[in-house]
Length: 347
Length: 225
Image 1 (tube, each protein chain N blue to C red):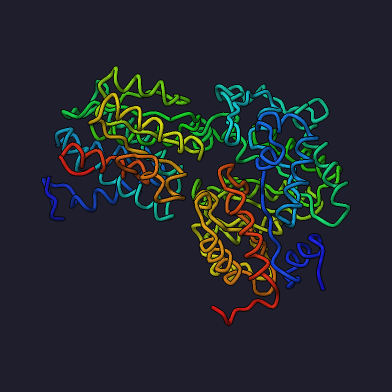
Image 2: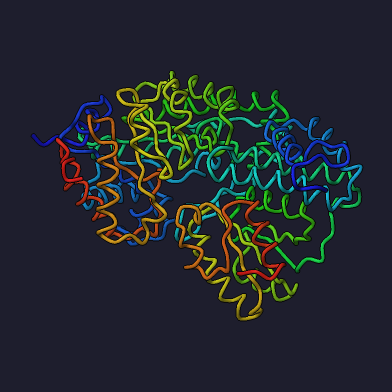
């Protein structure tokens, strides 16, 4: 029996086999193409984004709606400038914390006063209305541990982590407070799940012994406050060696890097953590239909058996440059190879 | 300095020293790093100290990051500690001067500077003078600066895909005004798409700061690219 996207996703998260593998096409920019407007204009008005997400959903039939716009929107709400470009997500401007001492005085924004965050909440409301309970609406927060990369700049932040634990923890307390409030605000508007972007806790960025004392402690504190499923997303960072730590945060799912083996990940996480991934979004720009099919099939066969798997890209944001026909091929290949029971004998 | 693993002038074997330095660097133990370097480098020329001890340690750390064994923060802090210790040991600007090429580095149309900082650290530790063109530089600005400064090796770092794709315009312009300039690229998009550096017309691509050093040394020694 054909399931709705919501039923399909819930079954996958419960480690049961739905009718087919859910497909999360995490498109934050292609809506502007659908509407024929510049990216900066698209981001500026909730109505554009709601309409863009609706059109993308009808066109590609993905199993989620995504209220996320761009990573710099949180620092923007704290007072940072945002530098827009025509063909990709905007960059964050100069850090709002210009020297470590600024940590003493920087204060989280009031969500009610932030135009940018209110826009996200309006998008959430609009998508929830469109979904009518049939398609999960995914909200996003930046982890308190990763947000300072934009708040302070990467080098200054690493120096603070390793050289000034007092200031580091002071900033973490402020960020935690903001992150929990921001996640709850999205949930109150009807977001079904929250993606907790935390690339800094990945093995790529921080040694596991340090992230266990910092990033994962913080993640546990935040995630327990969020009512509903949370996906920890390492945004292409490596997570396999710290899979148990990710599970310990209480997360329901994890975003897997394209550099990691889904089968190996599945072996460790089976029945405990749903895997989301791990198509290579950068390489995807020049894939043809055959390559798409091979990649989709491989991912599904490695991680799909028994549920607990959602097919997606490995970064949580598909680049603007990925052509429509690649996205359509992903959709068709998922429908062809993702039906349960999986046709593993064809391998 | 001996390189055959035998004791040299009362020191531990060079291999053991490099291992010991590397281990202190990745555990971010700057006191141990200082002690090892003072013990050895007081008896060696700055060139020997850097070439046979510090760079091999940093290069291995870079390789271990590429393989997923170490983290970016360990690479960054190792480079930073090494740079600081070299300055303390050898004075001036801390550089072991080579007769290197005119070389510059930038983050093109992008504002993520960690990669540039790590490459600068290891190249400066390796004795190369590198002009820092900063970040958020456009292709047009870069072409002008390369011609103005007669740059022989231009290093371009990016984090975001749109910026990486824009390198193509920069390379085309650079080759027009300075055909012999070598353009080397690095950054996340090139790690995810291994053919991308060729598509943007670069002469070479490095997966890490230490690999950049190897590429630069190769060019200086007359090897490809």
